[in-house]
Length: 64
Image (cartoon, rainbow, N blue to C red; front, side, top):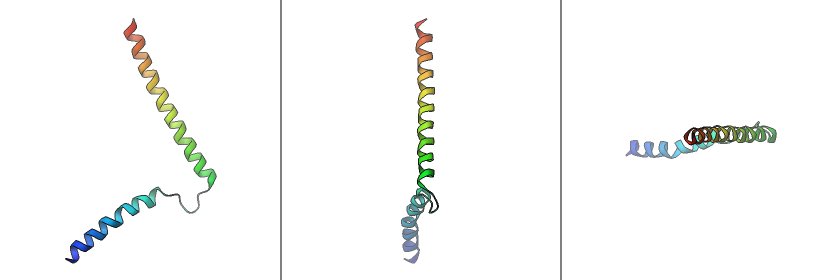
């Protein structure tokens, strides 16, 4: 019975650790958060541009 309770409490505590890793550290500032969001936005734009170029190159090749 103790082992079941121990494994249940371990399973309950495990997701909390994942959320704690995703949370901002105590020393982070608004500038750090803004830079992080800007970096993510830039990554999305670059990946979207690469996908658009790949699709448009394929369409141009098929039209010839």
